[in-house]
Length: 207
Image 1: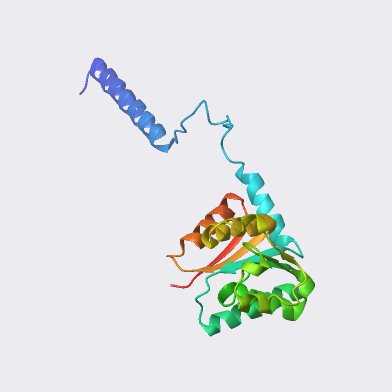
Image 2 (image 1 turned 120 degrees about the vertical axis):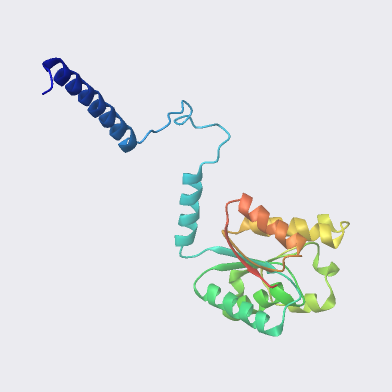
């Protein structure tokens, strides 16, 4: 038989073990959340993503928008027909199409499509003047009521004038639709500019 002192010693050891197990169990079931003193502090230079998302959602919900359509000149006829149909449908829904001049490709298809639906819902912003455009572009612009020229860019190269023109088009729109390939640096930069301006963007890569 165990003596009274031995029984007390065993009971004491069991209490210590049970206490240790309880502590271990509590530790395992607990979730430690780190507390950062700066968590509730909004930095001055951090973007207000809530406002940006609200603005984009409001743009999407608008019944009539200014939609910019720009893109590559080198498009197969099937792609041009698709863009033309898209522009017609968007104008018929009450939207305004904004694009630039072009004898072929994306811009030309957007012009044709918008003109079919409602010429007054088309705005063409040129990189320079009508007189500096090729004759086929000038012919295409006959009958377009809303053309914006830029004589102030007459001395610029067409590439530089086009970059500035794309930014102007994006500044005027609520939404950008762009058709480009991954090697189209000018158009890629235009898309990045639209992202910085928190525009609603739809990009179709052709490669």
